[in-house]
Length: 210
Image 1 (cartoon, rainbow, N blue to C red):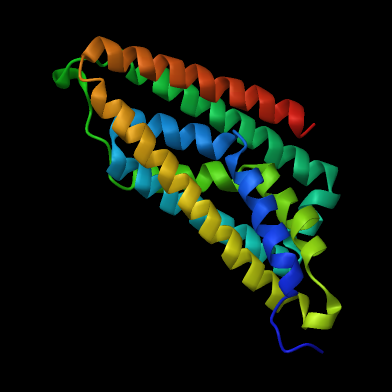
Image 2: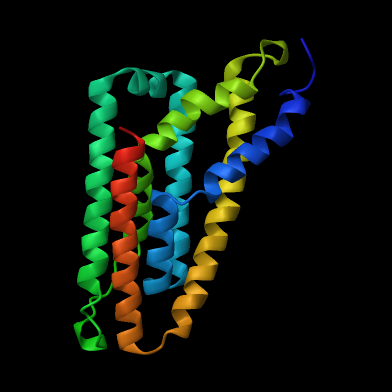
């Protein structure tokens, strides 16, 4: 057995694969961009924390074999898939509804915990996250480098790091763009556009995970 925790030759291909996965538009990216553009950097970063915890949950579930059971069961996978689609549609509706609250008097204060929990739930209801740890992660492990759980933890930590960097960059960029739109009418338009984008992502998710 090799002394290295994982196969060194697999690290860079794994980083590239993870970066491509994270940079592909999806539920997490669309929600984080919409939230940061409309509510600001702090709310977006709280949502990033929720998404990261959700990924950690799936990583641990893959080590315990839970994600394999979900991927292998049409009923469980279908329930997770449609729950994720419906939750994204709800987020789209919420963003669209908020676009009508253009004046400060009509704007309700957001619970500071809400972005974290919504980010967590959006990620847990994303079947692509479960499939990622079932299909991609095992391909970069080798029995020559120790037990699967140890290699999965190392590679999973690398995935979480890349995910955190990409999601924080999305939040910071979207928050900066949102800050430039000081006019209430412009912010309302952006929220409607982002709501439409989340709805399209929901439709895309339903199609891609069918």
